[in-house]
Image (cartoon, rainbow, N blue to C red; front, side, top):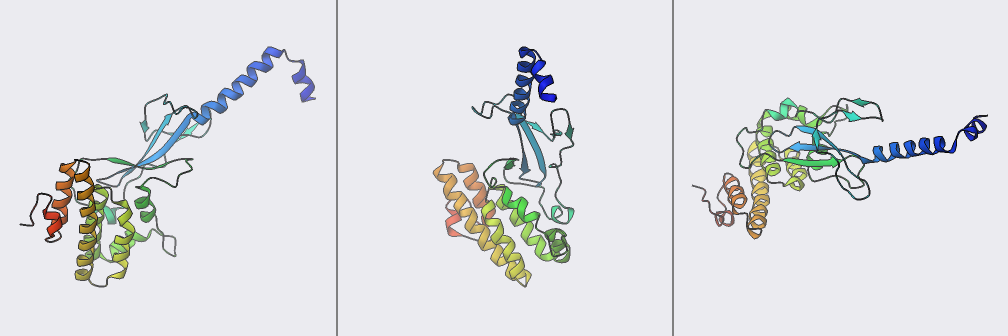
Length: 233
C-alpha cells in the first residue's frame, strides 16, 4: 500500500525527498565532538565543530562546552565539561611554569585510542571494588602521600609527560613511607624532565628546556639538569 502511494508521487517530489535524506545524513557526518584537558587545573571541556568528512575542510569554528547534538533537531547539555575532584584539586599548585594549554583527550567516534591526555583521564576515572572513584578517596586517606604525588603529576602534565603518570601512581601504591615515596617520585620526575630538556633543546626551545630543568632541580641536585642553565642553589 505504502509503496503504491509512493509510486504515485511525481518523480521530482521523490527526488527532493531523497536529496533531503542524503543531505541530512551528510550533515550528521560533518559533526565532530571531543574532549580537551586544562593542563593547569585538569578541568575537562567539550569541543565541537563541523567539517567535511571526505576532505577534512572545517566549516565552523570550534565551540567549547556547547550542547551535544543528539539528532537533527535536538541537543543535550555537554556532559564532557567537568571539574577535577576536590580531594585531588586541593593538592595542585596555583603557580605554574608554562602558559596554560588545553590538550586533546579524544575525538568522539575516532578509530584512534585517544590523545596523550587520555592517559590522565583514564587514571582519574579508575574505580575501586565498590565502583567509587579510587584516587579521590585515596587522597583523603593518604594526605601526606597525596601532597607528594599530585604536585609531581601536575608538573609532568604541564610538560606533556602523560606517559609517565602510570608509573608515578604505581609508586604511590607501592611505597610505604612518605620519605621513600618522595625519593622515588623525585627520581622519576627528574628522569622525565631530563628527557624534556633534551628534546626541547634539540628543537631550539630553550625556554621550556630551562623551565623543565628548574622544576627538576627542585627535587635535588642533578648534574645533567644543571647543563640546561640552572643550578640547585
